[in-house]
Image (cartoon, rainbow, N blue to C red):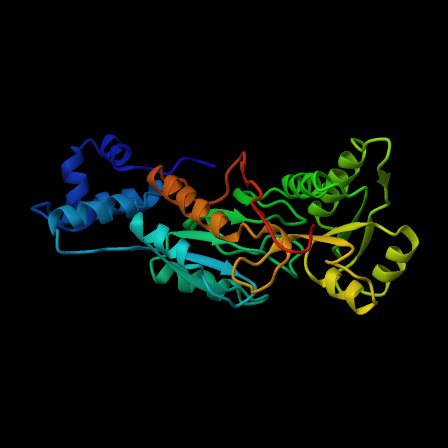
Length: 327
């Protein structure tokens, strides 16, 4: 992507000093109307856009009584709440976070709302139901993607590490002496990249089992499929089960399996706010959002807008929660 023009570029192209260009673009000072219009036209032609972070800092210096917050949008396909920790982090850096829902067929309307209301950054959530990246006029915004999609997304990513979650959970279960560990891995439709990562992580851990431990074939089924779970359990008789969420626990419990008592259980995605006694991995959504805000801040300070040529991945490591479903 072509680098965004800055004040120095406009000053060099116009042959005028930096302070004159700055005053003209802000419509302040004693710059003539002719020069102001010429510089503003040149700025548009060169693709110049003010850095909102620097502008906010400058405004605070001019008037210390002002508390300006640069608006950032969290966009998702579902309604919900932004964790307080993300708000706190955004406010500490001079931003405010607002949640917007993206709907198929209304992307252009959302893009106009964000642009006209002065939003400069987007934290892009999960795009369930989309088969490709929707058009939100990304060149107007600094963007960070949270999570992973089944199609390419040309932005820097912040997400949890599914491989790390399997690794930590599997080894916590083994440490307690379980010998027959079974994994229930939900299969997305269409197939999601994480499906292969989770499956590969389980197979790797099974390759490290000792001679008295049993490698049980992982169960891979759809998110809404319940019937295969008890059948798989009866066939392989694991003494501990790890699964993506608590749905597997309830499916086995309802089938009469002493899950969580005689049979250990661990989840790969526990809600930190839920009242339960499951052992497993805490959801990293809060940490992901905090890191996404940090990355948006870094991009804005360097005038990085729109798609990037070489997207990077920031992986948030798993955090174990001790519960009562493993002995």
